[in-house]
Amino acid sequence: MKILPSDNSYSTFCELTSGYRLFCVMREAVRSGIIDRVAAGACTPEELLVSCGLRLEEGLRFIRSLVNMGLLEQYDGQLYLTRFAATYLAGASPLNQRSVLEFEELLMENWSRLGTVLAEGQGALISEQPRDEYQRRLTLFQQAMAEAAHVRARELWEALPGLPESGLIVDIGAGDGSYLRAFLERHPGWQAIACDLPDVCAAAQSCPAPENLHWHPINILEPAELEKLVAAHRASAAVVLLSNLIHCYSAAENRALLAQLQELPGTDGLLVVHDFFSDANGFGALYDLHMLVNTWNGRCYTLEETADLLRQAGFLHQTLLELPSRSHAVIASRSRPYQGSSSLYPLRIKAGQLGFHAALDLDPAVIRSEAWVRAKCAYGCGEYGRKWSCPPHSMGSEEFRELLGGYSRALLVAGQPPLRSFQERLLELEKSAFLAGFKKALVFSGGPCCWCDSCPDERCAFPEKRRPSLESCGCDVFALAGSAGLTVAPLRNSDDFVQYIGMLLVD
Image 1 (cartoon, rainbow, N blue to C red):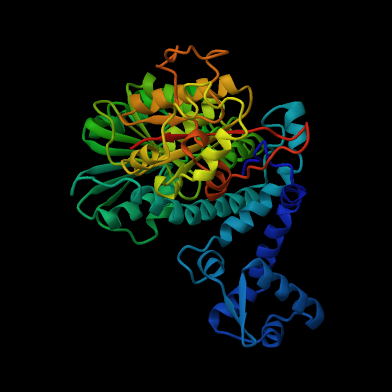
Image 2 (image 1 turned 60 degrees about the horizontal axis):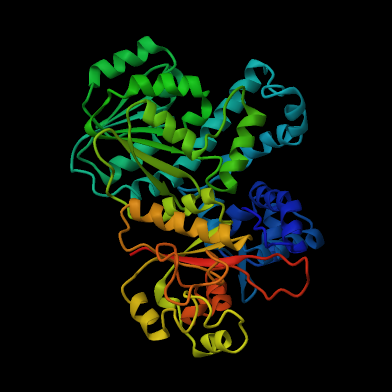
């Protein structure tokens, strides 16, 4: 999550400081046997507590908490799993994340010593473990990564449509092969090569796999081994996947890796970098700190750093995809941009880079033009009739409604003073959208035009910069922001947070 500049609520503070409690409750619900017992069949709270060997009074309080949190449901005295708990916590679920819960608990000790790393440097908490403990942690790590991959792999391949019926996909750092297994379920006519360390491949091969999934043991940091892989399949791969890989290595190691891999995809082949990026969202920023605390030199890269690494390797065309569970995929190619997605996410990222603190997808169909809004412009605003971007010179309500009918998508953006800077950034966002292929891109500002102190009587002095405000078109900005999930309130005190609302129509 990210705390918005306008969020000054104590409830947000409480949620942040008590988040670990939710983890502890989920972990204990699994560990005590409650989840699996309810998954086996509906039961009363008393029956559940007896079967799990828990005390009555304390157990009933715990069950009430599970119901209030949304892990259990209770109807007519019987307990049932919610969809969430049945999907991610029940042992019989193919998408269960129980190893993730166990592994996360191992990481808590290092997270509690974040200050040590900040004072002494990355790697300060890394120490050699006894062989048995190292093997236990490695096994749990691999199980946790495999469980997460079962979910994220589905998201990734659903976001990558339009692939041919046959081809070759190579997964560098394949782990147990979850991403390739999910890919081959959707594309059975393809051949797949899974590349990872010999012991990882050996463990993965012990599980049943489709005949078109092949294993290639390799240390990808050894140039000679990597060159053999590239030489065997040079220019023949239609897709090369690097999932959750680049965050394990330094920038120099990634440059060397990508330099060798650039000859693996064919001319129109795709290089898919699936990862967490430190500036993409709050989860990516936290994952970067996770690497800081728990690895020698791992880190999450920014989107621009990743783009630069890919450009240096010759992958000049890049498309960014946002996935539901907050990871991202950069689809890179040497020959032409990937055309399988029309997401507005790259524009939301651009808005963040320009300094807007919020950028939200918006359906233009929800926008309303109300007569009372323009009436308040005429009766109450000192700029009425004085600005070429304000009523009565601005776009009328009917014209505004007609314009909206030609668009199906929009972004609502929020920014801070000064107003002139806000409007400059809006124009830059419109330009970026136009250059990205959205030829109908048009922004609406918030507040009166501020390109000159007073407008000439004859005509606008800056027609190329002139944009109508949402209010001047009759838009109820308070209601519109609320429909998109933004809280906007009248200013009551001199120190209240000021934010401006603008909109970008894109197609």
